[in-house]
Image 1 (cartoon, rainbow, N blue to C red):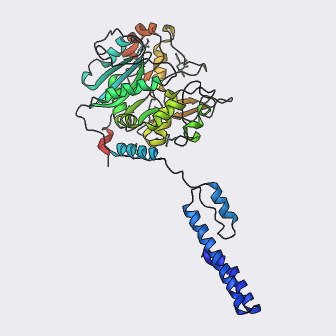
Image 2 (cartoon, protein in one colour):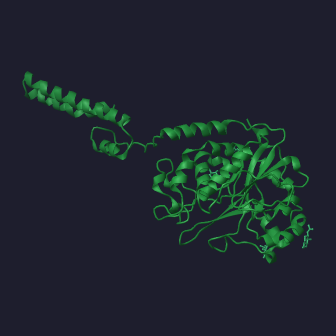
Length: 404
Ligand SMILES: *[C@@H]1O[C@H](CO)[C@@H](O)[C@H](O)[C@H]1NC(C)=O
Ligand SMILES: *[C@@H]1O[C@H](CO)[C@@H](O)[C@H](O)[C@H]1NC(C)=O
Ligand SMILES: *[C@@H]1O[C@H](CO)[C@@H](O)[C@H](O)[C@H]1NC(C)=O
Ligand SMILES: *[C@@H]1O[C@H](CO)[C@@H](O)[C@H](O)[C@H]1NC(C)=O
Protein backbone atom coordinates (compact mmCIF):
# COMPACT_ATOMS: atom_id res chain seq x y z
CA UNK A 1 0.00 0.00 0.00
CA UNK A 2 2.65 2.49 1.07
CA UNK A 3 4.85 1.22 -1.66
CA UNK A 4 2.25 1.62 -4.44
CA UNK A 5 1.69 5.24 -3.44
CA UNK A 6 5.35 5.88 -3.88
CA UNK A 7 5.51 4.10 -7.15
CA UNK A 8 2.65 5.77 -8.94
CA UNK A 9 4.33 9.02 -10.06
CA UNK A 10 7.25 7.07 -11.35
CA UNK A 11 5.03 4.73 -13.35
CA UNK A 12 3.16 7.63 -14.91
CA UNK A 13 6.33 9.33 -15.88
CA UNK A 14 7.43 6.02 -17.25
CA UNK A 15 4.43 5.73 -19.58
CA UNK A 16 4.77 9.31 -20.80
CA UNK A 17 8.40 8.78 -21.46
CA UNK A 18 7.87 5.52 -23.23
CA UNK A 19 5.74 7.36 -25.80
CA UNK A 20 8.17 10.12 -26.51
CA UNK A 21 11.42 8.26 -26.31
CA UNK A 22 13.03 5.40 -28.06
CA UNK A 23 13.69 2.00 -26.52
CA UNK A 24 17.26 2.46 -25.08
CA UNK A 25 16.18 5.61 -23.12
CA UNK A 26 13.74 3.43 -21.16
CA UNK A 27 16.54 1.92 -19.15
CA UNK A 28 17.11 5.11 -17.14
CA UNK A 29 13.52 5.48 -15.65
CA UNK A 30 13.56 1.80 -14.72
CA UNK A 31 16.78 2.41 -12.91
CA UNK A 32 15.25 5.42 -11.15
CA UNK A 33 12.19 3.38 -10.14
CA UNK A 34 14.47 0.78 -8.66
CA UNK A 35 16.47 3.42 -6.81
CA UNK A 36 13.40 5.24 -5.45
CA UNK A 37 11.76 2.03 -4.29
CA UNK A 38 15.01 0.99 -2.69
CA UNK A 39 15.08 4.30 -0.79
CA UNK A 40 11.48 3.80 0.34
CA UNK A 41 12.15 0.27 1.54
CA UNK A 42 15.22 1.59 3.30
CA UNK A 43 13.16 4.32 4.98
CA UNK A 44 10.52 1.82 6.09
CA UNK A 45 13.18 -0.41 7.57
CA UNK A 46 14.87 2.61 9.12
CA UNK A 47 11.54 3.55 10.70
CA UNK A 48 11.05 0.21 12.36
CA UNK A 49 14.61 -0.37 13.42
CA UNK A 50 15.94 3.10 14.13
CA UNK A 51 16.66 4.25 17.69
CA UNK A 52 13.39 5.83 18.79
CA UNK A 53 14.02 9.52 18.80
CA UNK A 54 12.23 12.52 17.46
CA UNK A 55 14.82 13.14 14.72
CA UNK A 56 13.88 9.96 12.90
CA UNK A 57 10.20 10.79 13.23
CA UNK A 58 10.74 14.19 11.66
CA UNK A 59 12.78 12.67 8.86
CA UNK A 60 9.79 10.51 8.23
CA UNK A 61 6.92 12.90 8.12
CA UNK A 62 8.87 15.28 5.88
CA UNK A 63 9.80 12.58 3.38
CA UNK A 64 6.91 12.64 0.94
CA UNK A 65 7.47 8.96 0.44
CA UNK A 66 5.29 7.98 3.35
CA UNK A 67 1.92 8.09 5.05
CA UNK A 68 0.61 11.09 6.98
CA UNK A 69 0.09 9.29 10.30
CA UNK A 70 2.51 10.46 13.01
CA UNK A 71 4.07 7.50 14.77
CA UNK A 72 3.15 7.08 18.48
CA UNK A 73 5.79 8.42 20.85
CA UNK A 74 7.87 5.36 21.56
CA UNK A 75 8.63 4.04 25.06
CA UNK A 76 12.14 4.49 26.42
CA UNK A 77 14.32 1.44 26.19
CA UNK A 78 15.15 0.13 29.70
CA UNK A 79 18.77 -0.07 30.81
CA UNK A 80 20.16 -3.51 31.73
CA UNK A 81 20.01 -2.68 35.45
CA UNK A 82 16.43 -1.48 35.12
CA UNK A 83 15.35 -4.65 33.36
CA UNK A 84 16.99 -6.74 36.09
CA UNK A 85 15.31 -4.63 38.79
CA UNK A 86 11.94 -4.92 37.07
CA UNK A 87 12.19 -8.71 36.96
CA UNK A 88 13.17 -9.08 40.62
CA UNK A 89 10.52 -6.68 41.92
CA UNK A 90 7.79 -8.22 39.80
CA UNK A 91 8.64 -11.74 41.01
CA UNK A 92 8.56 -10.67 44.67
CA UNK A 93 5.23 -8.90 44.24
CA UNK A 94 3.74 -11.97 42.53
CA UNK A 95 4.82 -14.33 45.32
CA UNK A 96 2.11 -14.68 48.01
CA UNK A 97 3.49 -13.77 51.43
CA UNK A 98 4.78 -16.45 53.73
CA UNK A 99 1.94 -18.00 55.74
CA UNK A 100 2.89 -17.45 59.36
CA UNK A 101 0.95 -19.22 62.12
CA UNK A 102 1.69 -16.32 64.40
CA UNK A 103 1.74 -13.09 62.36
CA UNK A 104 3.40 -10.21 64.20
CA UNK A 105 3.96 -6.52 63.73
CA UNK A 106 7.52 -5.20 63.95
CA UNK A 107 7.71 -1.88 65.78
CA UNK A 108 10.98 -0.27 64.70
CA UNK A 109 12.16 2.72 66.71
CA UNK A 110 14.63 5.14 65.15
CA UNK A 111 15.99 7.26 68.00
CA UNK A 112 19.13 9.14 69.05
CA UNK A 113 19.11 7.54 72.53
CA UNK A 114 16.71 6.77 75.36
CA UNK A 115 13.03 6.59 74.36
CA UNK A 116 10.94 8.94 76.53
CA UNK A 117 7.63 7.12 75.98
CA UNK A 118 8.51 3.51 76.84
CA UNK A 119 6.05 3.55 79.74
CA UNK A 120 3.23 4.62 77.43
CA UNK A 121 4.18 1.97 74.85
CA UNK A 122 4.22 -0.62 77.63
CA UNK A 123 0.56 0.17 78.34
CA UNK A 124 -0.06 -0.26 74.64
CA UNK A 125 1.78 -3.60 74.27
CA UNK A 126 0.66 -5.21 77.53
CA UNK A 127 -1.31 -8.43 77.04
CA UNK A 128 -0.32 -8.85 73.38
CA UNK A 129 3.13 -10.38 73.88
CA UNK A 130 2.85 -12.89 71.03
CA UNK A 131 1.77 -10.36 68.41
CA UNK A 132 4.66 -7.91 68.16
CA UNK A 133 8.42 -7.49 68.18
CA UNK A 134 10.33 -4.33 69.08
CA UNK A 135 13.56 -3.13 67.45
CA UNK A 136 15.53 -0.08 68.56
CA UNK A 137 18.15 1.72 66.45
CA UNK A 138 19.84 4.22 68.77
CA UNK A 139 22.15 6.35 66.67
CA UNK A 140 23.85 8.52 69.31
CA UNK A 141 23.98 6.88 72.71
CA UNK A 142 23.04 3.58 74.28
CA UNK A 143 19.46 3.90 75.55
CA UNK A 144 18.38 3.22 79.12
CA UNK A 145 15.25 1.09 78.90
CA UNK A 146 12.35 1.62 81.29
CA UNK A 147 10.16 -1.16 79.90
CA UNK A 148 10.75 -4.90 79.67
CA UNK A 149 9.41 -4.82 76.09
CA UNK A 150 12.38 -2.68 75.05
CA UNK A 151 15.15 -4.32 77.11
CA UNK A 152 17.68 -6.14 74.88
CA UNK A 153 15.94 -5.00 71.72
CA UNK A 154 18.72 -2.68 70.49
CA UNK A 155 20.14 -3.60 67.08
CA UNK A 156 23.57 -2.68 65.75
CA UNK A 157 23.45 1.00 64.90
CA UNK A 158 25.43 3.67 63.09
CA UNK A 159 25.40 7.42 63.40
CA UNK A 160 22.43 9.16 61.74
CA UNK A 161 22.71 12.75 60.57
CA UNK A 162 19.44 14.62 60.05
CA UNK A 163 18.63 14.98 56.35
CA UNK A 164 21.52 12.80 55.18
CA UNK A 165 21.41 9.41 53.54
CA UNK A 166 22.45 7.74 56.81
CA UNK A 167 18.76 8.11 57.75
CA UNK A 168 17.70 5.80 54.91
CA UNK A 169 20.54 3.41 55.75
CA UNK A 170 19.28 3.18 59.34
CA UNK A 171 15.72 2.51 58.11
CA UNK A 172 17.04 -0.29 55.91
CA UNK A 173 19.11 -1.70 58.80
CA UNK A 174 16.00 -1.83 61.01
CA UNK A 175 14.00 -3.54 58.26
CA UNK A 176 16.70 -6.12 57.59
CA UNK A 177 16.87 -7.05 61.28
CA UNK A 178 13.09 -7.25 61.56
CA UNK A 179 12.84 -9.38 58.40
CA UNK A 180 15.01 -12.05 60.06
CA UNK A 181 11.91 -13.04 62.06
CA UNK A 182 9.59 -14.83 59.59
CA UNK A 183 6.58 -14.05 61.81
CA UNK A 184 6.89 -10.32 61.16
CA UNK A 185 4.31 -9.41 58.51
CA UNK A 186 4.07 -5.65 58.86
CA UNK A 187 6.83 -3.18 59.65
CA UNK A 188 6.22 0.15 61.36
CA UNK A 189 8.88 2.86 61.57
CA UNK A 190 8.55 5.12 64.63
CA UNK A 191 10.59 7.87 66.26
CA UNK A 192 11.34 8.70 69.88
CA UNK A 193 8.63 11.42 69.75
CA UNK A 194 5.85 9.11 68.48
CA UNK A 195 2.89 7.95 70.57
CA UNK A 196 0.16 5.33 69.94
CA UNK A 197 -3.31 6.73 69.19
CA UNK A 198 -5.33 3.52 69.50
CA UNK A 199 -5.26 0.31 71.49
CA UNK A 200 -3.18 -2.63 70.30
CA UNK A 201 -6.01 -4.67 68.75
CA UNK A 202 -7.16 -1.74 66.67
CA UNK A 203 -3.63 -1.09 65.35
CA UNK A 204 -2.97 -4.79 64.75
CA UNK A 205 -6.14 -5.33 62.73
CA UNK A 206 -5.80 -2.06 60.85
CA UNK A 207 -2.33 -3.01 59.59
CA UNK A 208 -2.69 -6.75 59.25
CA UNK A 209 -6.02 -6.91 57.47
CA UNK A 210 -5.17 -4.77 54.51
CA UNK A 211 -2.99 -5.46 51.48
CA UNK A 212 -1.37 -2.03 51.06
CA UNK A 213 1.62 -0.31 52.55
CA UNK A 214 1.13 3.04 54.23
CA UNK A 215 3.81 5.03 52.46
CA UNK A 216 3.19 8.74 52.22
CA UNK A 217 3.36 9.81 48.57
CA UNK A 218 2.32 12.92 46.64
CA UNK A 219 3.47 15.33 43.94
CA UNK A 220 4.75 18.65 45.26
CA UNK A 221 5.67 20.79 42.24
CA UNK A 222 7.27 23.39 44.51
CA UNK A 223 10.87 23.98 45.64
CA UNK A 224 10.59 21.51 48.56
CA UNK A 225 9.24 18.82 46.25
CA UNK A 226 10.13 18.38 42.58
CA UNK A 227 12.45 21.39 42.94
CA UNK A 228 14.85 19.02 44.71
CA UNK A 229 15.04 16.68 41.72
CA UNK A 230 18.38 16.33 39.95
CA UNK A 231 18.80 15.35 36.28
CA UNK A 232 21.65 13.06 37.38
CA UNK A 233 18.90 10.59 38.31
CA UNK A 234 18.09 10.01 34.65
CA UNK A 235 17.29 7.75 32.93
CA UNK A 236 15.74 5.61 35.71
CA UNK A 237 14.06 8.48 37.57
CA UNK A 238 12.47 11.13 35.40
CA UNK A 239 11.38 14.47 36.85
CA UNK A 240 7.75 13.38 36.41
CA UNK A 241 8.40 10.31 38.59
CA UNK A 242 9.70 12.32 41.55
CA UNK A 243 7.50 12.06 44.68
CA UNK A 244 7.54 13.38 48.22
CA UNK A 245 6.31 11.97 51.51
CA UNK A 246 6.98 11.75 55.23
CA UNK A 247 9.55 9.07 56.12
CA UNK A 248 7.38 7.41 58.81
CA UNK A 249 6.17 4.40 56.88
CA UNK A 250 4.31 1.23 57.75
CA UNK A 251 4.88 -1.47 55.15
CA UNK A 252 3.91 -5.05 54.43
CA UNK A 253 6.49 -7.83 54.26
CA UNK A 254 6.60 -8.02 50.45
CA UNK A 255 7.50 -4.34 50.21
CA UNK A 256 10.15 -4.70 52.90
CA UNK A 257 11.76 -7.46 50.83
CA UNK A 258 11.47 -5.36 47.66
CA UNK A 259 13.37 -2.64 49.49
CA UNK A 260 16.12 -5.16 50.44
CA UNK A 261 16.38 -6.15 46.77
CA UNK A 262 16.77 -2.60 45.45
CA UNK A 263 20.27 -1.41 44.77
CA UNK A 264 19.71 0.61 41.60
CA UNK A 265 17.34 3.32 42.88
CA UNK A 266 18.88 3.23 46.35
CA UNK A 267 22.27 4.16 44.86
CA UNK A 268 20.75 6.84 42.60
CA UNK A 269 19.25 8.56 45.64
CA UNK A 270 22.36 8.05 47.73
CA UNK A 271 24.47 9.82 45.09
CA UNK A 272 22.07 12.45 43.76
CA UNK A 273 19.49 13.22 46.46
CA UNK A 274 21.46 14.77 49.29
CA UNK A 275 21.93 18.13 50.93
CA UNK A 276 23.96 20.73 49.05
CA UNK A 277 24.26 19.09 45.64
CA UNK A 278 24.39 21.52 42.68
CA UNK A 279 23.08 24.26 44.96
CA UNK A 280 20.04 22.21 45.98
CA UNK A 281 19.13 20.41 49.19
CA UNK A 282 17.53 17.03 48.64
CA UNK A 283 16.58 14.72 51.52
CA UNK A 284 16.47 11.06 50.52
CA UNK A 285 14.37 10.04 53.52
CA UNK A 286 11.52 12.15 52.09
CA UNK A 287 11.86 11.04 48.46
CA UNK A 288 13.45 7.63 47.97
CA UNK A 289 10.65 5.35 49.16
CA UNK A 290 7.71 7.38 47.75
CA UNK A 291 9.42 7.69 44.35
CA UNK A 292 10.66 4.09 44.22
CA UNK A 293 7.36 2.46 45.24
CA UNK A 294 5.30 4.82 43.10
CA UNK A 295 7.36 3.57 40.13
CA UNK A 296 7.26 -0.12 41.05
CA UNK A 297 3.89 -0.73 42.71
CA UNK A 298 1.66 2.39 42.72
CA UNK A 299 -1.48 0.34 43.37
CA UNK A 300 0.09 -1.20 46.48
CA UNK A 301 0.35 2.15 48.29
CA UNK A 302 -2.20 3.94 50.45
CA UNK A 303 -0.29 7.19 49.74
CA UNK A 304 -0.67 8.45 53.28
CA UNK A 305 1.30 7.73 56.45
CA UNK A 306 -0.49 6.30 59.50
CA UNK A 307 1.64 8.60 61.66
CA UNK A 308 0.03 11.98 62.25
CA UNK A 309 2.07 15.17 62.25
CA UNK A 310 0.91 18.78 62.38
CA UNK A 311 2.46 20.97 59.64
CA UNK A 312 -0.23 23.64 59.91
CA UNK A 313 2.13 26.18 61.47
CA UNK A 314 4.05 26.29 58.17
CA UNK A 315 7.45 26.22 59.83
CA UNK A 316 10.59 24.26 58.99
CA UNK A 317 9.75 21.69 61.68
CA UNK A 318 6.28 20.35 62.52
CA UNK A 319 4.44 21.41 65.63
CA UNK A 320 5.62 19.72 68.84
CA UNK A 321 3.04 19.27 71.61
CA UNK A 322 3.68 20.36 75.22
CA UNK A 323 1.96 19.24 78.42
CA UNK A 324 -0.64 22.03 78.33
CA UNK A 325 -1.61 21.03 74.75
CA UNK A 326 -2.23 17.40 75.64
CA UNK A 327 -5.92 17.00 76.43
CA UNK A 328 -8.58 14.39 75.85
CA UNK A 329 -10.08 16.66 73.16
CA UNK A 330 -6.80 17.01 71.27
CA UNK A 331 -6.20 13.26 71.19
CA UNK A 332 -9.79 12.46 70.25
CA UNK A 333 -9.59 15.04 67.49
CA UNK A 334 -6.46 13.49 66.04
CA UNK A 335 -7.79 9.94 66.30
CA UNK A 336 -10.96 10.96 64.46
CA UNK A 337 -9.34 12.60 61.40
CA UNK A 338 -10.48 10.73 58.29
CA UNK A 339 -8.79 12.80 55.56
CA UNK A 340 -5.07 12.99 54.90
CA UNK A 341 -3.59 16.40 54.19
CA UNK A 342 -0.70 17.34 51.92
CA UNK A 343 0.60 20.88 51.54
CA UNK A 344 2.59 21.81 48.45
CA UNK A 345 5.48 24.29 48.57
CA UNK A 346 4.84 26.61 45.61
CA UNK A 347 4.50 30.36 46.26
CA UNK A 348 0.79 29.82 46.30
CA UNK A 349 0.63 26.77 48.58
CA UNK A 350 -2.08 24.25 47.83
CA UNK A 351 -3.72 22.03 50.43
CA UNK A 352 -4.64 18.59 49.13
CA UNK A 353 -7.16 16.64 51.23
CA UNK A 354 -7.87 13.01 50.43
CA UNK A 355 -10.29 10.72 52.30
CA UNK A 356 -8.51 7.79 53.97
CA UNK A 357 -9.92 4.61 52.50
CA UNK A 358 -9.16 1.41 54.39
CA UNK A 359 -10.13 -1.57 52.22
CA UNK A 360 -12.39 0.83 50.35
CA UNK A 361 -14.11 2.12 53.51
CA UNK A 362 -13.65 5.57 54.99
CA UNK A 363 -11.73 5.15 58.26
CA UNK A 364 -9.66 7.31 60.61
CA UNK A 365 -6.23 7.85 59.00
CA UNK A 366 -3.88 7.73 61.94
CA UNK A 367 -2.60 5.07 64.34
CA UNK A 368 0.35 7.03 65.76
CA UNK A 369 1.19 10.70 66.24
CA UNK A 370 4.26 12.93 66.60
CA UNK A 371 5.86 15.12 67.84
CA UNK A 372 5.41 15.10 71.62
CA UNK A 373 7.87 16.54 74.13
CA UNK A 374 9.11 14.04 76.78
CA UNK A 375 7.40 16.19 79.45
CA UNK A 376 3.99 15.02 78.16
CA UNK A 377 4.57 11.40 79.29
CA UNK A 378 2.64 11.62 82.58
CA UNK A 379 -0.39 13.25 80.97
CA UNK A 380 -0.41 10.74 78.10
CA UNK A 381 -0.19 7.72 80.40
CA UNK A 382 -3.04 9.14 82.46
CA UNK A 383 -5.23 9.69 79.38
CA UNK A 384 -4.24 6.59 77.36
CA UNK A 385 -7.01 4.18 78.34
CA UNK A 386 -9.46 7.03 78.07
CA UNK A 387 -8.65 8.34 74.57
CA UNK A 388 -8.19 4.89 73.03
CA UNK A 389 -11.57 3.67 74.28
CA UNK A 390 -14.65 3.29 72.11
CA UNK A 391 -12.97 2.70 68.75
CA UNK A 392 -14.07 -0.63 67.37
CA UNK A 393 -11.20 -2.56 65.83
CA UNK A 394 -11.73 -3.07 62.08
CA UNK A 395 -12.35 -6.79 61.83
CA UNK A 396 -12.20 -8.79 58.65
CA UNK A 397 -10.36 -11.85 57.44
CA UNK A 398 -6.69 -11.36 56.67
CA UNK A 399 -6.47 -10.04 53.12
CA UNK A 400 -4.47 -13.05 51.88
CA UNK A 401 -7.55 -15.24 52.40
CA UNK A 402 -9.02 -13.44 49.41
CA UNK A 403 -6.18 -14.08 47.00
CA UNK A 404 -7.37 -15.59 43.73
C1 LIG B 1 -6.06 -5.31 47.54
O1 LIG B 1 -7.33 -5.87 47.72
C2 LIG B 1 -8.34 -5.23 46.97
C3 LIG B 1 -9.68 -5.81 47.38
O2 LIG B 1 -9.60 -7.14 47.77
C4 LIG B 1 -8.04 -5.42 45.48
O3 LIG B 1 -9.01 -4.74 44.72
C5 LIG B 1 -6.66 -4.81 45.19
O4 LIG B 1 -6.31 -5.04 43.84
C6 LIG B 1 -5.60 -5.42 46.08
N1 LIG B 1 -4.37 -4.69 45.89
C7 LIG B 1 -3.17 -5.27 45.88
C8 LIG B 1 -2.00 -4.35 45.70
O5 LIG B 1 -3.01 -6.45 46.01
C1 LIG C 1 -1.81 5.98 45.26
O1 LIG C 1 -1.32 6.72 44.17
C2 LIG C 1 -1.09 5.95 42.99
C3 LIG C 1 -0.45 6.82 41.95
O2 LIG C 1 -0.63 8.16 42.13
C4 LIG C 1 -2.40 5.38 42.52
O3 LIG C 1 -2.19 4.59 41.37
C5 LIG C 1 -3.01 4.54 43.63
O4 LIG C 1 -4.27 4.05 43.25
C6 LIG C 1 -3.15 5.36 44.90
N1 LIG C 1 -3.62 4.50 45.98
C7 LIG C 1 -4.81 4.62 46.51
C8 LIG C 1 -5.17 3.64 47.60
O5 LIG C 1 -5.61 5.47 46.15
C1 LIG D 1 -11.14 19.61 68.39
O1 LIG D 1 -11.94 19.76 67.24
C2 LIG D 1 -13.00 20.71 67.39
C3 LIG D 1 -13.88 20.62 66.19
O2 LIG D 1 -13.13 20.64 65.00
C4 LIG D 1 -12.40 22.09 67.63
O3 LIG D 1 -13.42 23.04 67.80
C5 LIG D 1 -11.51 22.04 68.88
O4 LIG D 1 -10.87 23.28 69.06
C6 LIG D 1 -10.49 20.93 68.77
N1 LIG D 1 -9.80 20.82 70.03
C7 LIG D 1 -8.48 20.67 70.13
C8 LIG D 1 -7.91 20.63 71.51
O5 LIG D 1 -7.75 20.60 69.17
C1 LIG E 1 -12.19 10.85 79.28
O1 LIG E 1 -11.87 11.99 80.04
C2 LIG E 1 -12.69 13.13 79.78
C3 LIG E 1 -12.22 14.30 80.56
O2 LIG E 1 -10.88 14.23 80.90
C4 LIG E 1 -14.13 12.81 80.09
O3 LIG E 1 -14.92 13.92 79.77
C5 LIG E 1 -14.57 11.61 79.30
O4 LIG E 1 -15.85 11.24 79.69
C6 LIG E 1 -13.61 10.44 79.51
N1 LIG E 1 -13.98 9.41 78.54
C7 LIG E 1 -13.98 8.14 78.82
C8 LIG E 1 -14.34 7.22 77.67
O5 LIG E 1 -13.70 7.70 79.90
